[in-house]
Length: 386
Image 1 (tube, rainbow, N blue to C red):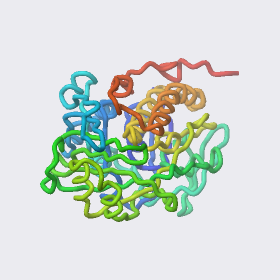
Image 2: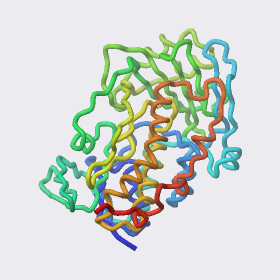
Image 3: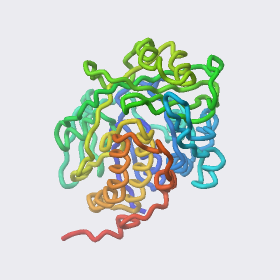
Image 4: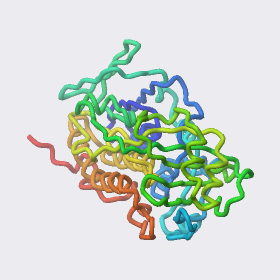
C-alpha cells in the first residue's frame, strides 16, 4: 500500500469526510481549520440517500441517526391552493430503493459525528492558512502563526470563499441572484400544520418565493427556509440576523398552512444567494478542490453538503495505492469522475425546478460514491506520461 502525506485546508463536512476516507486508505492526513472550535451555528442540513450511504461507508451512520430526523416524504405544494404537485415516499422506501434513508440533521451534529472518529492530532483548530505554494514535488502551506508544512497533496475544502481556489485560479466573480434566503428553527409543538414529518416545498407564484420545511432533532423541531427578493443586501453569511416580519409581510397571501410556518419564526438568519458557473478545472499541480470550494451552489436542491461528501469518497478512491509521482494523474481521474455530475446539480439547483411537478430522483439519490465506476480504479492503473 502506498502512503501519501496530505494536507486539507478546511475542517468542515467535506474536509473531515475526505480525511477519514483517505486515512482508511493508509494515507497520513492533517486538517487545518481556522476556527478555534466548532459551535452550534450554521445551517441545518438535508442528507439525501446518496450522502447517507456515503457516510455509512465511513462508519458514522449509527451516530448521525441518533440525532437526525427521517422525513417520511418529499412533497411539493402550490403556494395558494396547497395542492400537492409531487410526493415521493422516503424513509423505508428510500432505504429499500437506494440503500439509505433521507436524514435531516443540524450541521453541528454531523460535524461532531465526523470529528469523534478522527484519530488524535489530525484536526488542528485555530490553524488559519494564509498562503499556499507548490513545486513539482511538494505542496506547501503557511499558517498565520508562522508555521509551514509540506505535503505530497493539498486539498482545498475551505468552502464558498475558498482561499485555495483563489490562490490557484484567481478571484471569482459570483453573480447575485437578487434573492435573500432566511433560515429558522421552530419547535414543532408551536405548529399546527400537516406533514411536519415530511420534507415539504411550497412553490410560490414566481421563482423568487418558496418555503421549504423539514423535521429536525428527531422530529422535535421544524426547520424553515424561505426566500425574498432584495436588491440592496448582498452579504453571503449564514450568521447575519434577519427580521421575521419581512417573511410575514411577504408570505401573507400564501396558503394558511404555509403562512403559519413563517408566522411562527421568532428569530431568523439570512444570507444573500449568489450563483457561480461550474469551474472548468479543479486541480493544479499537487493541489485540488472539493465541495463548495469548487462547485458552490444555491440550496434549492439541498445538495451542497451531499456533493462535498461524494467528492470526498471518490477522491479517496482515486488516490488508492497512489505514489507521490502519480498524484497529478490521480487528480485527473477525480475531476473526470465528478465534474459532470456536480455541474448538473449546480445548474439544476440554479434553475430551481427540481421535482416541482414530479419526476424521477433516481439519478441523484441512487448514486453510490463507493462503487461508481472510475476511469481507473487506482492511481496504479494510470499511465504516467514520460
